[in-house]
Amino acid sequence: MAQFIVRQLEDDVKARLKRRADRHGRSMEEEVRHILRDVVKQENKRAPSLGSRIAARFKKVGLTADLPELHGQPVRSAEFGK
Image (cartoon, rainbow, N blue to C red; front, side, top):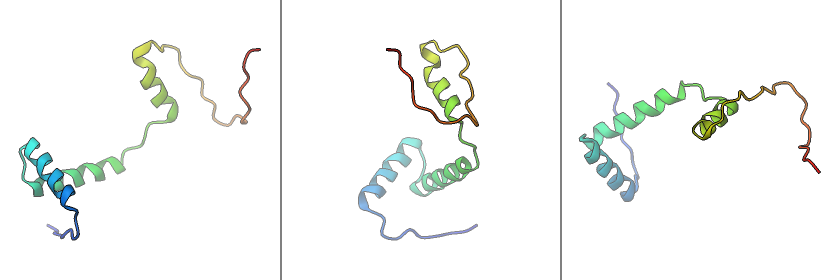
């Protein structure tokens, strides 16, 4: 297994890592491994599209209609009723 040393880590970051590790019942070293594993896993996940994020945000307030896809359509100014 690989090892590395993190130099010049701010004291407040170290203290927050220690508190976080305590909350999770892990050593500080294991907490850092856990954080690094999670970050690397998330890099491989595809971020949801904007439309999916909007639909998810409004799902709890009653958005039931599908939002139309606008891929490939020209950009145009918003039109507001007069």
